[in-house]
Length: 296
Image (cartoon, rainbow, N blue to C red; front, side, top):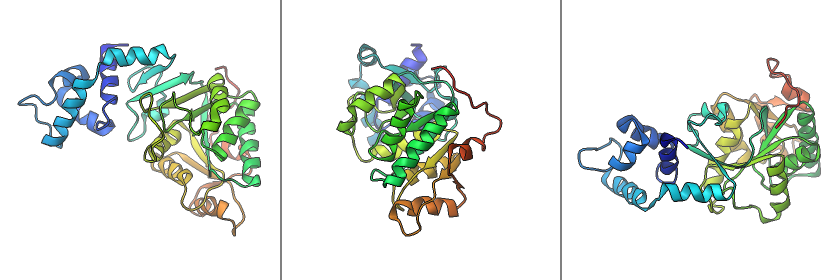
């Protein structure tokens, strides 16, 4: 790992420093290594960083042994990809707040990413359609991205795996933490047919606030996002909003107007999301792309 990337990784371990704060720090110091050793010293005041925050970050820097942390990750067979690595996904790099670092367990496949998201408590119709469209996307050579949550996410991943396709799970935990617990088998199958990835350090447990943040990565990786079933208050709609904000395509599966399962997706369609009945409705929105199966 290059020195520049090594210290980017170090900065990513500090909870109070995200993409925007790091951008401010780098605009001041120009180099993450210089920033690491000079941050908070007398005469290095940075606008927007008060005394309390500066001291908190300085204390965090003093506690981190970057080499030790890198070795710990690598011993577990996990790859570290920084924002400046050649392997960092191009579409993700373009979002307004890309993760500084991605932890990758498995391998990121090459190809066209489409995310499929939805409720954790789907109907039988939602399960059937998630599996059907995931299978069809795989047949077109698409790569299915989701969040490995119960319900629509899990069925989308599983269908991709069963049909010899590739899939990526974006976690709201560290990549070494399986959540939900019953997803252990699926977790292993995803690693065999793609990757589980996260921006969160190893050992990060499932904290509620992490999941909406990771949804921007699901949307950011993908050409477009399909919402299969979702009530009006749903994490899947947060993912759709991220996709809209980043100028990506949003697709939605229609459902009964009296069903809570479909209230969110029907609303998306009314607001301009493309109504989807099959994967063909998705791939035809990208006529400039060669939709063929590709090797991992």
